[in-house]
Image 1 (cartoon, rainbow, N blue to C red):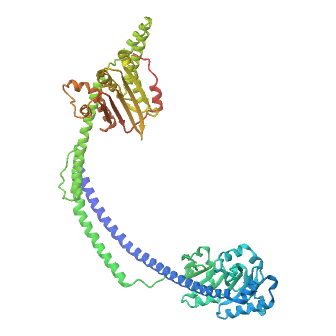
Image 2: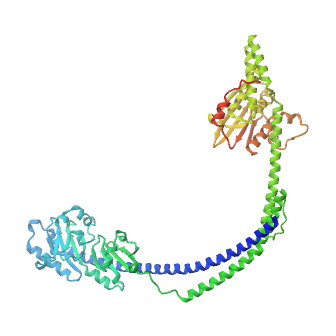
Image 3: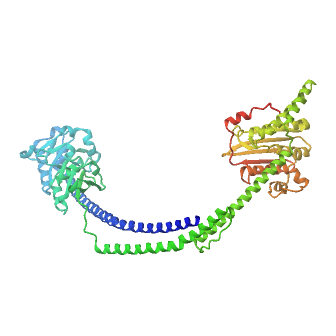
Length: 607
């Protein structure tokens, strides 16, 4: 039954592959059609955008060039003597004759060009003259209050003699017939004294803009509008689409209108001139050339043939070998074995896959073996440590009874020693836990040292520098007591003088460090290397030297197993001076609050 299911799966996979290839062909055809449509539409849009930018930049540059030409013309009035006398004269000295003389002088200069509509010159005391004769004096409206306004004058005066361009004199000057004016404004200065004498407004007729549009082949689809929305020239139907978005020296494109009236509207502002140029166009280009269609057809045919060839190749050289590989792996699984396979795959990527699978199987077997050995070492180390300690429960009751007898006899020191010994074994057993907090481990050490001080008197001192944030960290039980015992019997006692044992703990970057330092005889580097070595004899008879260091070596092995790392112990020593052993716990965990509370309560049950 399993083989039949496998065959059905194989047939299903092959048919799925054919369906996938058919789907790819369908998607390819659809993609070609959509691509032709999208490319054509995109090309039309790009063509319209390029055309719009060309037209707008051409018209904007023409308008800027015309304005620049009249900028130069306005400089001539700075050197006009009658006009300078009119501006320089005191208020009481201005006469009708002086005004007419200056007016006629202005008219002579205006005759050089045809697009200057009028010129207005304002003195500092706001008296003014214009190029208009008495017959058309009512053709303009002048807002003297606005001209006196500092906010209106500020842009002109800030130019210090350079021109500023506005529409209708920035609302201070208008024609009564509503025709728009392009106003070139500049502050007038006395050439001799360099003192400001007034302001000149040169007004250009909108016919100037109409002439620019007539010179452009696309002029019928162009509209010129002031940045304030004032219609200047061109196609008036585009005014309704004007917005502040087009008030930029960069070309802005928007699709406007609906249905048949939908079009691409492009616009930009003329450099240094408050005029916006709008251009409407419909995205369209000639039909795609037949040569392009032929090339696309040929490419499509080549791609279709490539798909068929690729499908055949995949079926023969990929799916077949994969089936053989999966059969071999499935056989391993059913037999419950972790053995290498031989699927007879070709020496390519699939062969590499088979090789990597075999390497993985070998690695897994090696890991299982290592884990087994590690657990075995851990258990042996724990059993050896536990066998070397006195830990029967009846010891509690015995110690307590002896303590009461000592109290009755007045031997209070004996009672204290027995009480300390009871506390030591109570913490030592820890309800059978294999892991305890660093706080309880320190309690065990303190009780043990208290008992040792009864024997060795003043030659033994202990110090503690335990960081508060390390007290709740979980460590293997009885990792410090063997070190303390080793420091006393193989360090301080052999030195023959008073010694100190100091225990330090601190956290650094989430890593717990515990250091035990004694001022004993120290040890050689050869001895340190031997203790840190993982190749000590683990069975059979041990030498005396090996037996003496077993407690320390077994503790190191337990910590290595607990941390699942080898490089977690540092030993530093100076012979005749000190020995310092540092344990490093890379992933320090802490007891939960509930566990901490129960841990600090000593049990009185000594059954």
